[in-house]
Amino acid sequence: MKKRRLNRGKVLSYEHLEQGVEFGRYRDVDGDAVPYRTYPGTHPTKGSYFTRGSSHDKDARYSERGEDYTEGMARLLRKWETMKAHVPAPIHKPAARRTPDGVIYFGSTDPAMEEALSALEAQGVYLDALRIRAFPFAQEVFDFIRDHEQVFVVEQNRDAQLKSLLVNEGGVHPARLVSVLHYDGSPISARFIIKDISEKLKSAHAAALPEQAK
Image (cartoon, rainbow, N blue to C red; front, side, top):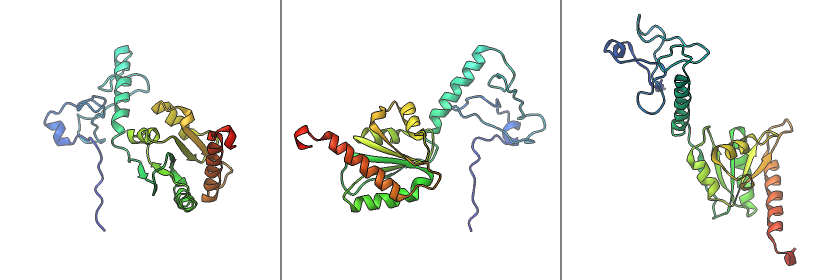
């Protein structure tokens, strides 16, 4: 088995500190809002830091200055944006045919969704699928929503938490997202997904028909 090499991120070594590299636990050195850190015991006199639970400055020193607090909050916001490019990207699974409908899902819904997508396609129902794997969301998630007339959001909770995050983070109109919610205490099944999405598609198509065709 090959040895796994873990990327520990931006860590300063004893040699770095000895060479005079300036260390500040919350300093944005590279412009990506992700500061460097040191391991405990890396150097006998350099690299260690102490942070109170209250406000601190970029060098981890206690501070009650409003400017320090504001700077820290602004850095965290920039860090949030930086992380969108570093978390696992969503997986796009296009349908076999062009379709105006999409579905977004995540986590343990994956096996049931795989089965449901295959079964729906056999019934002539085509859905472009996007499996979300991380938060914050990459721009690709919102591009996917934009490119479809309606997107089903499949999740295993009562309160449509994923849908709420999509609306709040991306400014998505709630009407673009159709919740498929499963919360009876058992794992979500392909049968449930197929039934719920099929019924919602049938209702949407019926609502779109002119009155004389109903």
